[in-house]
Length: 303
Image 1 (cartoon, rainbow, N blue to C red):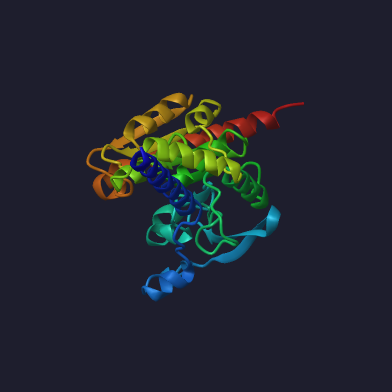
Image 2: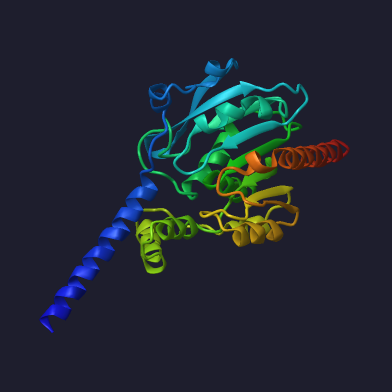
């Protein structure tokens, strides 16, 4: 009996430690800062890849500062694109592909989410406070009402983009690469990849995150409340954002569309189907821009 009690105590301690470690990793991802890039000989800002830019910050409650890169696009009458990176990433994500996005836009804006990149202080929003931050960013852009704003997001950023599209009418369209249904999904999947107990540990971690103010939201439910085109891109071998979840999100959106990339994991979609995905993105931007133009023209015809 004593051994059983000792074993139960030890097992409980192990579970508690796994839960705490999962929570800490989620809220304190590795920082891919400009210094991190410099130390690896990588571009540290748009200027390093020959692109002009401005730097500014979003100030949020609690002393949170979110840095932004603001880049001119190559399409004078094109939309404004807002780029939102994934968990553990930063604005640096977009630098290798900057010209691909500039050719589609009149302006390109990249932000570091809470707890990522050069944002301050520590503590990731995990798709909760990030939504309000993105809406605040849109308010700061001072874009003309006639300019459509598209949000391009990856993983966490894809989820945040869809959640924000359900909260504001300023977003004209979303490209969501590898979104997931709720925060518990990536927590569970990362535990599975490590061969650790995933079900109850991820559930307990979510309860702990709720206690510190991170409240999981349903991406699928948010998608159902949107009224703009949403393109969901997912790999059928994605270990973090399951294909079925992504398809359900796309199907829940009234104007949802999807591109499933055979053999793709969590981040190599364009490597395997670049031309097809480029065409799908261009169609979405064109459709969303036309819809926003028609809406704006109709509003102008009023009394």
